[in-house]
Length: 167
Image 1 (tube, rainbow, N blue to C red):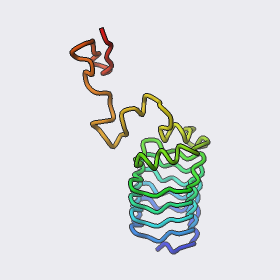
Image 2 (image 1 turned 90 degrees about the vertical axis):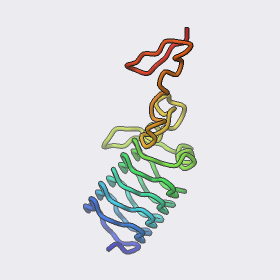
Image 3 (image 1 turned 180 degrees about the vertical axis):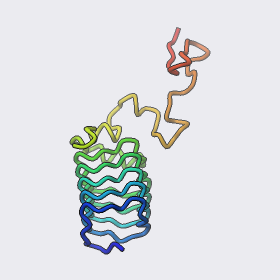
Image 4 (image 1 turned 60 degrees about the vertical axis):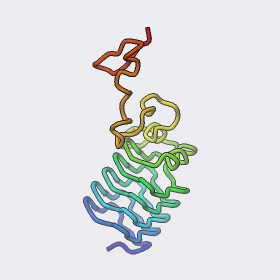
């Protein structure tokens, strides 16, 4: 059981269930949460520095002012979660699912590079107008690839790549 302000440094919480848990101001730095369920949990000012939160369900969480410095959040689902004031320097959000307004808010101050994955926080969030992020996220299969035969009537489309050129 996790209680507010508890210390769980470098612990293994793989596939653990923290649904609706009160994790306020707790220290989870260096811990592993692969495949854990943290939906509807309150982790206000929680410390996840260097934690591996890959493949976790963090839907509808309160993560205000949480510390994600150098955390790994690969393929993490953060839909309808509040990350207001979260510290994200060096965090890797590659293929994570975030609501667009939340992602845009994080992009305003995203910085650093994750020391484990070597991925830039800004790049992992898809900040800027990079083409690789122009079609949505991995969670939206209909939007995650260029439209098929976009210029089929007026141009040439390469079947292998899906890219088209106008005539």
